[in-house]
Length: 225
Image (cartoon, rainbow, N blue to C red; front, top):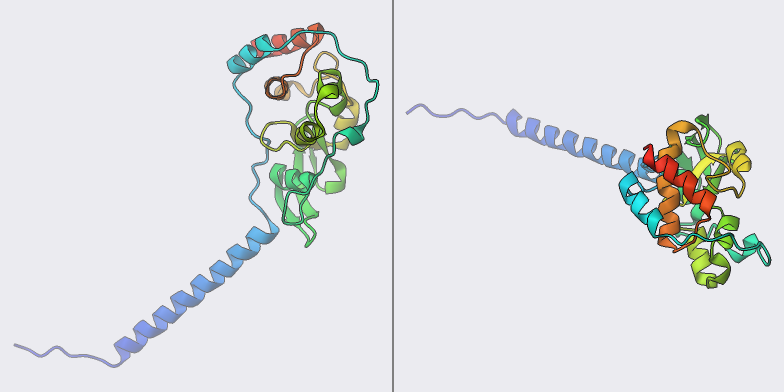
């Protein structure tokens, strides 16, 4: 039987190849870690609300009543932008969630990125141009039952990241909306179905009431979804 010939160069080639793979892996790991620190993956949207049919059922279950007065209302009764950990407050978390290619500094402040404002279809490239809107405004919540809530419940409402209550939009569209309900103000047509579904979801979650014109407006949108 012929003898197998071996070469001392073969093991050296394997060693060099292994070292090269390890070096490449380490470099990629370092790059990935850096990306995770400075550019968190973005959903680019709040949590998805229930379907239109589910929202219609939720709307049917809400109490219809006139709005309460604004007596005693203050935004300070709804503590917002609370600490969410890792030096980030609620506003900064939403900026990262709703944005694209968002980079932050050591204090969790957004230093670059872009944000698409669903209310008016505008793309923003500076965090200073972005407002974090309470989809159901704090004043609207007050008129719809929040005046009787505990401090803890109002704080939960003002910082709710688990429902579609917070969204990054242009400052101009947020100012135009103010504290109006869907009978008085609506975003661009392409976003109205999702907006109505989200509005009903939030009101259902907190057992808030709706007034007659508000319910009529929401029903009309949901029926056309």
